[in-house]
Amino acid sequence: MKYFIYGASGGVGREVASLLLKKGESVVGSSRKPTLQKSESNLSWIEVNTEVPEKGTEALHGVDKVFLMSPPGHMDQYTLLKPWIDESKKQGVKKIVLMTAMGIEHAPPEVPFKKLELYLADSGIDYIILRPNWFMQNFQTSWLSGIKKDRKIYFPGGSAKVSFIDSIDIAKSVVGAFEDSIEKNRGYMLTGREAIDHSEVAGLISKATGITISYEDITSESFVSMLINNGINQDYSNFLAMIAGALKEGKSVAITGDVKYLSGKEPTKFEEYAKENASVWK
Image (cartoon, helix red, strand yellow):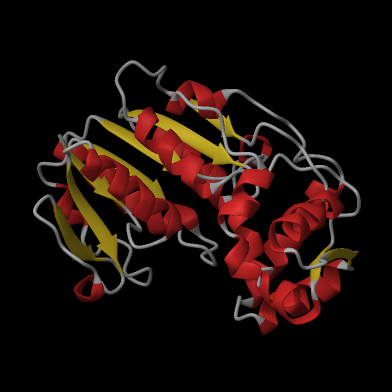
């Protein structure tokens, strides 16, 4: 079986590709800088360009199944990924697994991610849509500077609980979703198996590292400024602030069994994730 992974050099995509290679599958991965990626006997790379969305789509020739996701920071997911759905249909791809985000199912149809979901559903290709909750990995990437510098988690989340998910569990769910035995042509909500607030997160990171970390509930405006200072563009920073507002309203608390259904394993608890990644925060 031959698979195409959009964004195979990123966190989720890289893990998806790795899991498929361990199963003996053939993988074509995309990257903005394919020459910097390591090729293997069953792994080849092509170049993609968010400014030219159709670039590289010819690589879908001979591909059986496709994983699509939008790179972080890109706001028009529909324009970016539509050419890949169109070419998949031309090439007779058997299944597309698309990753969007938790809550997109409730978005208006003109929202790019929702528009993309609807377009895929109407494409005639067998599909599965995965909608993950907030990533645990945000605490070692986007929110890391505050933790390292001030020993604080800066986030406008109030005391709302969140069923954070490990990106490795997302990747395992993607691989599971490719299986023919999985119910297709529907969406799945990917969550952790517990819901905790940011103060509890700070406590678990403190326990794992031996360093006292605290949580500071900041304003939405301060959050946007922090993100921009960390190199995230204005539009995407505003988007993250908007969905953080939904989190604060309690809309990220749901816990589902979808990760276990798709991957066959219970999702990682935050305490386990913190222990595994403790060195990141020291």
